[in-house]
Every structure is written in C-alpha cells, then in structure tokens.
Length: 210
Image (tube, rainbow, N blue to C red):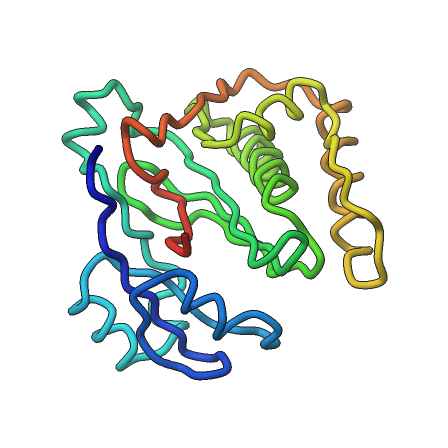
C-alpha cells in the first residue's frame, strides 16, 4: 500500500493559529470558530511561507495537486477543461465551491462560504454553475467532477439532498431550487466526466483541506 503523503495545515484564523501536521489537529482549531481561515500544503516550506503571509494571498491560487500536466496528458485528461470541487467543514457545516481551468489552475469562479451546507450539495451547485458558465461563453470544453453523487443528480436534474432547511441555510436552498430550475429549463451539450482521484490524484479544483 502506498504511503499517504504528509500534508501541512495552516490556520490563519482559528482557536489557535499555526501550522499543523494532521487534519484532526487542524479541525480542532476551526470547528465552532466563525469564519475560520485555513488551507493545506504539501511541503513544510510552502506552509511556513503561506503562514507568514495572509489567507487572502493564497485563497485564489491553484490548489496543491498530486498530478502534473504531463501525467494528466498520459492518462488522457483533457487539459482544455473545467474542474469543479467543493469543500465543507462539518456535515452539515460551512461549505464553498469553485471551478478552475484544468490546464493552468486559474480560478474561474468561487462561491461561498454558505452555512449549514454539505459537500454533496456544493459539488452539485459547482457542476450547475460550471454548465451555465460554459453555455454562456459558448465553450465546448468538458467538465470534470470527482463526485459520482453530484453527477447522478445532474443527470436526474434534481438535487436529492436530505439537508434539512434551517434559518442559516435558507439562501443555500434557494440556490438549489434555482439550479434545478436551470437544469430543467436549459439544454446543453457539455460533457461531464468523472475525475478518477485514485489514479490521477486530487482534482485541480480541490481546496486542499482533507
């Protein structure tokens, strides 16, 4: 079995800001902390450099990925494509999602954070956002997602979440309804492809917080 790569977690705003070497320790610093700011890195030097700066300086940068562009090509990944992903601190918890251009890692959109959300809902909304964006731009590039659940919801044109409605996630449920309406009201030719994480590593749109 391949050894899991060491990650370093920077917490800029949390119970105790600092650099942590496990997700469990990082999670203790951000749970229950309003608007916590944190991110993971693959090397200690990268983490120390980021911690010396601000969260805003690294938030929009390409997330660390375990696959190079050369390896993507070897595995048949279409570089001229959009990758989408979501992150959620808790279940439910604070959720956000984004899309990046696969070839360069340029962030094309980011939404959130939304309170009382789930990762599956974020993955679903990210896909719909990507579909609408590509249709608006007249782009024929495919979209990659690492979520089988979200891809199946897109095909069914329904977000089959069991997320209960609360005062904090009213906006999120409105976004879900809008996304479902878009799917049922629009036709698109964009190909949605499954990102094979076990083979290719983390999707380029990954937030790097696992």
